[in-house]
Image (tube, rainbow, N blue to C red):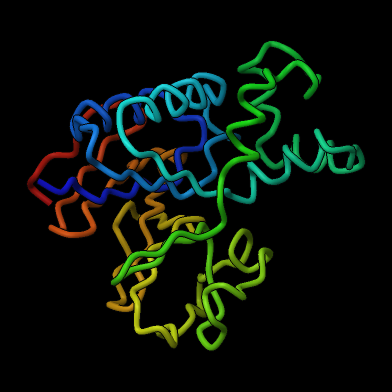
Length: 222
């Protein structure tokens, strides 16, 4: 029996939310879980979020995408030290606190390897997944990384992609905590670190799970 295809929005260091969401989903070995990036920064426990995701990859087929916050950390680790202060003020300070050190060199290599192995895009027969956005008139294999990692859709979402596939994205936080569904584009960053929800979506059935930053499931009365 084929497994589920589930996608999870921006986690941003919200460990309790991730744990609660995974308990609700109960991933099985045949499931594919696409995480949309921004695993670190802003929330309280980036370190253990990465530990949870590394462990999750042993339970199911995990397909992690790279977010702009994750990318900034990798760039600093790769030698672009001048980005350090901007990253710290952008939420990286919370990440460093979770490791108990102001030095990015103290972040375990296993965690860096996980982020380095994240991809920018994943596609299926019906959908494609990116962290941030896309160019509607460019083929999926020619999408620019800055658009996929950084481009906000607030106020100016892209139109339908020429492939005809639906886009599923994160990055642009929906401050009211509600999924943005434009038909051709679905955004599931529902502002967990800001006190709203961490969202998971079963792409095939449409089932939605949402938990708050403390890991409590959202009341069905919405």
